[in-house]
Each structure stands twice: as structure tokens, then as C-alpha cells.
Length: 397
Ligand SMILES: [Fe+2]
Ligand SMILES: [Fe+2]
Image 1 (spheres, helix red, strand yellow):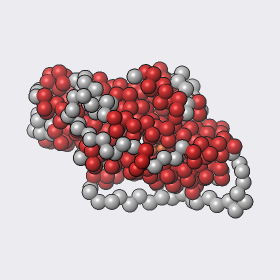
Image 2 (cartoon, rainbow, N blue to C red; image 1 turned 60 degrees about the vertical axis):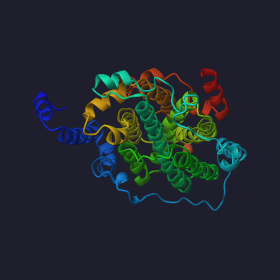
Image 3 (cartoon, rainbow, N blue to C red; image 1 turned 180 degrees about the horizontal axis):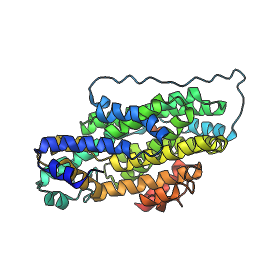
Image 4 (spheres, rainbow, N blue to C red; image 1 turned 90 degrees about the vertical axis):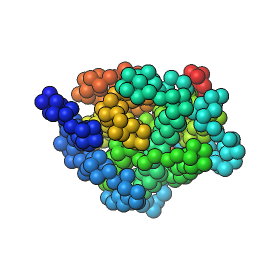
């Protein structure tokens, strides 16, 4: 986007200023990549609050105004048998985090017998080539930071999911969906609890919310349209989270974390299933113009998530002032563990977008261009339950 001359001039600036410019360019690029003006209008205010003002990082609570209506139905119709079945399964699937998880496990993030992340997750040779040489202890500490960063982002996503699930439960028209939604609110509350408890008492580290994640949560909390909240949370954020949880479940050797993820994955599989059920029929009823807006929105948000989860919070803690921000971005993009994460996340997300009808022939070239078309053939969430997912992950491990 920026010409060679700008790049050359920027390269002459001191590192701190170069980093500030890099951050600003990146924030601008996120917004400039959006092609549909309606999508820009709906994402831009959140983009400014998240990327420019960094509202999620001010250390004070954020007040996000909501614009949806609560939909009451005093006739209590039985209106969706699949959602009712999901509600029944969700009641049976409830678990008490205090007794289900072995909280007595002593977690030592530096114990080589139970590593949080596998060896080779970070490519330390690539980091050395960028000028950063770490000794064995520092490497362990960096892995601990990256694991804490990922789990912190899961936690922040869960807080978003808790409030989005509550909003959607109010806003949808289908009554069986509201009953099901009540179980999801409980699930998400439990997820906030267990991720926070794990970070607070076991890893003893908590990172602030990533700006791009903030943008997405902010945008869907404020949107008045229930299906945009659904698309954003149940399909995009939850779909990607399900992929991320699965990758970490497969990779970690820390027994408490593994067990925690196993329980959370079973709940999340129901949430994404609900998202697919609710949106598949709804999308067919929209006008062409409404449908196009959602197709573009989903693609842009997918890109935002794919390109931007770059652990800058870890960078700022460790390397700000000694490594250019752009070099860190290159390192995180190519390091094997994070690459693997992106692969699994999108292999879960893309089939769901296909299933609800948002990857149309018009969008295919754009998905292909960014390398996401390869995931089109996967199973959507309505075909995968929690047990099936865990069995698949255990089998692949
Ligand atoms: Fe959750
Ligand atoms: Fe969820």
C-alpha cells in the first residue's frame, strides 16, 4: 500500500518511531482492505475504538452500547425441533468446573515432562536470524508467555461470547433457540471462569485483549441485527476458537490444561452447531443486497482474524525497542506453531461459512487468493458433535 519512498524514509527513523508508524500503517491497512462500503461503515467505528484508541487496553472497564431489541413471545411456541434437541443435549452436557477438573494438579510451565506447547512451536533459529538470541531459560520463559497470551485471548473471547450469547438469547425469534441459548450463556460463564482460574492460579500471567479481537467483539456487540451478532460470534469467533482449542488440546502435554480444553471443546461444538442451524435458513430469506453484505463481512472478518493475531502484546513485553515490529510480525507469521494454529482454525471455519451459504461463486476468487479455498471440503459443525471432535483429535495426536 505504501510506496518505496515512504518505506525508505520510514527506515531512517529511530526504532520507536518506526514501530509507531508500523502500528498505524497496519491499523489503516485493516480498514483500507475492506471493499464493501457498508462493511466499512459497520466496522470502522469499532476499528477506531480498537486499533487507534486501544479501548481494550486502558485498564478500565469498557462500556459498549447495544442496539438490539429483546423479542418476547407470550405463546411459547415449539418452533424448532433441532434446536430443542440441542437444548436437551446441552442440559445433559452441563458440568461443574469445581469437580470435573483436577485443579489440584501442580502446573510447572518449565517442566520438560509436561510442556505447555511442544518443542519446535517457536522457531528460535529464525528469531536468532532476526538478531535475537535467547538462552535455554529465556526460551522457556518466552514459550510460557506465548501460551499465556493465547489463553488470555481465549479468555477475552469467552467474555465476548458470554455477552453475545446473552444478547442473542434476547434477540432471536425462535423460542426453542432461546431455551438453548440460556444453556450457552451458562456454558460461556463457565468458560470465562475456567480460563481465568487457569491463567490466574496456574500460569500466573494475564495479557490484555488483542486490538483486533477487540474490534470484532465491539462490532458485533453494538450491531442491532441479531444475525450479524450470530455470524460474528457463533460462526467466526467460536468457529475459530474451536479450531484453536483443538490444536492446543492436541499439542499440550500439561494434563490440567488438556482436560480443561476437552470439556470446553464439547460445549463449543454445540455452540457452533447452533450457529449453523440458525443461520442456514435465515440466509436464504435475505434480499440479495443483504446477503452480499454478509458475504463480504464474513470474508473481511476472516481476514482480520487470519492476518492479525500476531501476539504483539508478547512483542511489546519482550522485544519492543530491540526488534522492529515488522520483523516480529514476520517471525510470528512463519513460526511453525502459529502457522499450524491458523491452518486448523480455518479448516473449522470455512466449511461452516460454506454451509450457511456465505461462500458464493462471487467470493470464491477472493477466498482462493488468500489461500482459504483449500478448506472448503471439510465437515460443517452440524455434522460434528463434541465427542466426535475429541475422538478425531485423539486419533490425530
Ligand atoms: Fe465458550
Ligand atoms: Fe461458545
